[in-house]
Image (cartoon, rainbow, N blue to C red; front, side, top):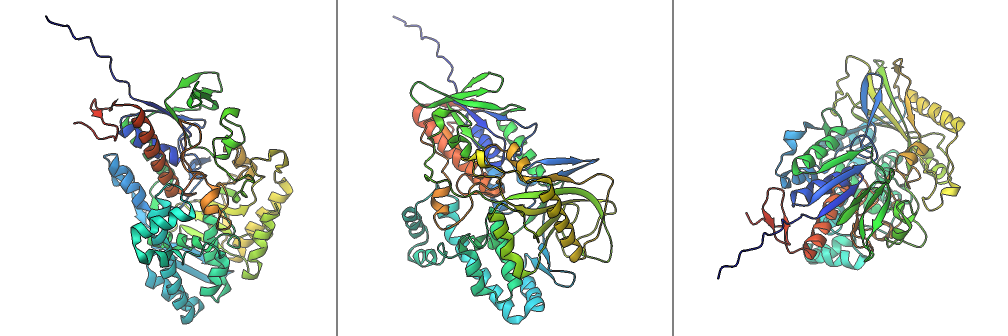
Length: 545
């Protein structure tokens, strides 16, 4: 007797919604789609990128967010995993000058990617003994980076014990000795005093704490690894950093990710079993999913912005950690007068070294500094010794550190900076440029100023802080930032407020980690899923073709 086989219902791939098209979300979306998951990106802005955005000023587009690309290998590996090549999507040029520094009109120092070039420059600037101390500092910074790279930055959020175990497993007995030298209990400022006797160099390398939104007087000495990361290579992207966000979105689209811009999420939807099952948009539309990846500030969950049921999704300290720094930025078009300060791509203009602590004391008290350190990105300049000035008005971004408005858990106490405060800081910024000899002829287009309150409005629950929790004290590295997995089934996290921390490559690593966690969770509950090319995937994600 013949039995007719019943038609088999087509297998449905699991569906994931990604809320927020920042670097972490873009990375995770592309990787999940590559594994056969149906991915839809929801972004409240009109374009991808998150903090990596563009600003329109007159006829020109300027980078409005990150200006430095480091750890290029993160993106080379990402594009390779997607079956693509980073070089086919972006044109990158390595900077020979990491940054040009100035203390007034006659004190200049270029820090170079080449160690010996920097040693020679520091010897001329501050003496041979200080140059040798710089060489020792570089060795220490490199050792800290090597100790923490895979066990910390490329792993799930560790505890002190699990970090020690990972280091010993990967590096053997010598790893314990290196682990003791990462100096988590010493401030970066104190550690720098052991290497540099020239207060200007201590000031220069202390500024690396601000790359994580922290004060060098409060941040752990572990952050000296940032100096090593930057010295390994800093890259310029032709057309600006925003091209990276565009390239990631295009790569995701090639994998099958769909994107909805101008689309704001009101709340997360819960399943009957207590897990997250989708989202509700501001217009009332409901979208179902097997999992949701939230790529916004993690405090948005704790503050209830995505609904009360997920307020306890995170294992966070009872007292929220201090927020990181915010910023005042000015984007402008201007011609640089010849004969003064010659810009490179990245430039840092310091005030007197003896006033440096006062800058961070003022910020800690909620005020703008009277004599701010000014960072200037000359987007049209090459990152080399010449700087190669353009033959027209240049695209410039000037930035000074500023206090965030308030912790996200206490919005009632948030205080927006007043216009007189901002005007005084702006004048202090212009004065600082003038003292360094940088003379500008602005174009008819007025500079565009972005304030902490503007950042707070653009990125909910941040209070204007640009880097999530501040890296303050040794506990911050282990407990201030959540891992990508939450207490709520089906809800995952990525972005700069999540482990391993702020910065473009770190956000990408968080997205990579989140994609791995989501794929593992979904594959463990489904025997098979259908890949985008029609091939079946096993629970481990290995194609049967």
